[in-house]
Amino acid sequence: MSSGRVVEGSFSAVDRRALGSVATQFFVNGAAFASFVPRLPEIRERIGVGLDGLGGLLTIAITIGTVGSLRSPAIIARFGTRRTLIVGGLLMVSALPTIGFATVPFVFVVGAAAMMVADGLVDVSMNLQGSWLSARRHAPVMNRLHGLWSLGTVVGGLAAAQAASAGVSLRVHLTCASVLMIGSLLFVGRGLLTVDEGDDESVDETDDETRDPNGEHDETDRGRGAKRSRATRIALLVLALSGACSITVELVSTDWAAFRLSEDFGAAAGFAGLGYVAFTIGMTVGRLGGDLVVMRIGDDRLLRWAIIVSGVGLATAALAPNRWVVLAAYAVAGLGVSTFFPKLYDDAAKFRGRRGLGLAWLRTGASVTALMIPTLVGVLAASSLSVGAATAIVTLPCVTGLFALSSRR
Image (cartoon, rainbow, N blue to C red; front, side, top):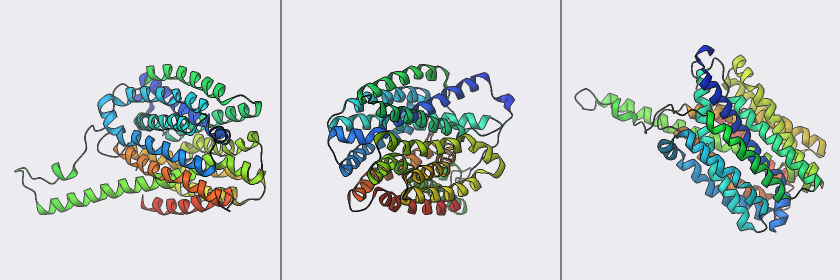
């Protein structure tokens, strides 16, 4: 799916300010989750659960958080993307201290679930505004926006790894991170677009397009309308399945890279956290340069090459016997995975119908899959398998599936 680009002269000062606000929010979103994910091994010890128990708790949090994605079109239709983003952003970063103070599983789930619900609302809102602004420019910006999300994860991940190495408590670390991020939302809120684009209501393609001037349906037109309706449902399903495959390879890499190094190689917390950082550095580099590559070879071709690169990186990261090779492989995998979601989100944001409908399907497909991933990998890793073998069993089939879906798109 592609859209025409207008000249830079039509990109006003208001648009530039809005793009700066959206870019900042992408960075904050990445930093927020990276602030606690690299320290999950410590959190697991504090709340007293095993690997499979942690996987179950993350599944519960994601289940609750799926509400944010499912309800986002209705909430955005009522309040608009700007207000939805601001309120959701405040809720998301305010939940960080709850995770930091958690010493029992229940408190951890409350904090993680609050972040997941808020992220569903913020993610749809900021990607809608980002896609609208990208369409007004002479060149795409979605990869760079997602690159800022990845840069946020690098900064947040490095800060988390450094805090762990320096012995800074989770409470102090996550409380300070929350305060800084709340301050950034003051800048974000002032610059966001105040008027949304796109459709408000669901589009029933069989209504207006299959009725003749006298209000009677022509059988041929009705058949065409049914075909278009089926094509719409198939396109939404492909978005959902693509989101499912993409979130699997990304979630497994971000959530379990530290465990791959700590459990399989006995690495200390500071070194183990670098697995997450290596993956996100690869994602950041790929996304910051992705828009330039899109202009040269096209986004469909880029997606196919990215899938191949990610497959090589993920297989090596899961099976290599050396910790330094694993770190390098996670960087390569991140480079490949980097352009998956920018492409999918931009396509979903342009989907005809109710504002955010395509994004809701994409995120729901990803969220439903994410419900199973922590428990699945946790159970496999807690068995006789290594963490590396467990991640390979889950991620490599998804890379193959994504390649097949990309030929359908």
